[in-house]
Image (cartoon, rainbow, N blue to C red; front, top):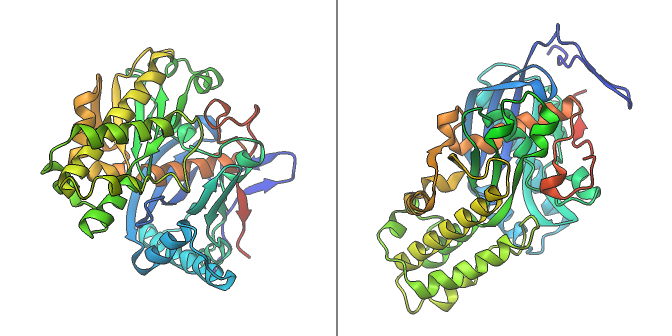
Length: 397
């Protein structure tokens, strides 16, 4: 097996890359979300360096976690596990990553793998993205960058959301103020104002980016499906679409979701709102509670984004690009679209499939880490400026 090509030097002071030897990097991004249902993998071709880079999606793949999902979900729910069991899960997750990455590479070689790992605890300043990256670097003969949140957390930030700078690389547009809305385990968003995208001044543009976590989303909906339907999720939101929203449960959930949106912190362990359904499950059909939840989510998410956008340079949102597993829920998307003042579309319209926006973003963040560009934004994570350099590295032998 030939030695991996990684024409770069880290000397503790500066990073140098041989653009002639590697004019275009093939970077793999891996993301397992807080819904703990599948691993998303995206292979990007990245041309250029730092904030001037341009990224194009080559291939993507989703691999269900299968038997790994149940113990990972239990661990994330803070059930006690032995150290040996947790160590075993970290190794199994690495093997699982390797299998999924091989699938998306289809015989090609990558220049870099960026892996997020599975969040099993997040309560800043402590957070744990479970993964043993060393087997990945070894078996795929490729450098791996991981633990992307840790430096921001150590510096005093929330460590999340970490995708806004990647969204700037992937989605900024001169003609529209865009909100990138992630219907993931938790809903988060990035606001890219129209006024800053054509300036060609990255520092000024990035200073104007806004974003943050809003509230529980798929974590809530999937939890409701497990509780009310005895199913892992409400497929395509069909059961919710068949239901009727009721004011009492909807309004009580709006209050809970607004409380999350107003905390000004990143969301994680303990924010699932799993107990909401218990107050109403004996009084309302499951379909009605699912529909009420979708309506409550849409109300709070739109309200939060428009509140931030009103104070941003663009003064509003022209276009909402929707991403994340929740876009499959037709009831949620319909309720959201009905409340938006701007156009709505899937992120597919901008070249990145909705299901793989986070994995593509992780690939971009990995490339930025390789270029020694800080990936978190103080205005969003709350870390003191200047933001720290992020990423922990494992190199193949």
